[in-house]
Length: 281
Image (cartoon, rainbow, N blue to C red; front, side, top):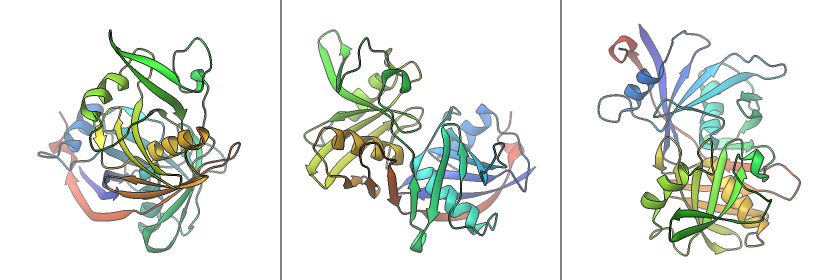
C-alpha cells in the first residue's frame, strides 16, 4: 500500500509525520526501525502519528515512536512540528489546538514564520513521578557510573523522564560515554533522557541531550524544558532563558508552581509517498 508522509524537523531533531486520520496503516516495531534507517529508509529520530482523539475536548491524538520502535510519552520539538503539520495539511483551521499525548493534554499555538509556542504542562520532581529509585527526596542525587565514578544529577519529568547534569563545557562533555550508562541505569526503571547543560549566564544555557531509544540528537524540546527548569530551581537561571542546542535555540519560560512554556521554530522538509510493503517483513 502507498503511505503519504511528511518529513519535518525542529532544530534538526527530525521526524516522519504520518496522518492516520485520512489514511489507515499498521506500523509495527520492525517496520518503524526500517523506515528510520538513514541509509535504507526515510531516516528520522522519531515517527509522529496523527490520530483521532479518544478523550473529550482534544482536537487530535499524538503518538511518538523512537527510531528503535519504542513509544514515548512526549516530544517537545515533535509537538511543535505536529501543530504545523495538522494546519498545513488542512486537518484543522485552528492556530491553537489541544493535543492528547500519553502524558496528558498539551496546547501548541502556531505563530508567524513556523514558530510555535507550547504549554508543556507542569514539571514533576518527585522520584516516583520520574520514575527514579531513591530512598529520600533530595534536590540533587549522586548515581554510580562505575565502582569508582559518580555523577550528580537533577531529575525532572516533562511528560517524559530527564536526568540533568551541569558541565563546564558542553563541547567537551562525555555525552557518548556517559549518556548510554545513565539512560539505562538501574535507578531509572523506564530508562531516561540525559541532559548535559552548560550555564553561560542567567539568561543563557547550552545543552546536549542523549535521548533514550535514539542517542544524541541535534535538539530535544522536553530536554531543554527539563534543563532550564533544573537551572531555575537551583537559582542559576532566570525565569526566561534561551537554551542553545546543536540545531538552534529555544525560549523556555517557567515560574515555580506554574506550567512551562516553550517557544521555537519548525520546518517542513518535504512531502512524500512510499510503498509500505517494501518496509514490512
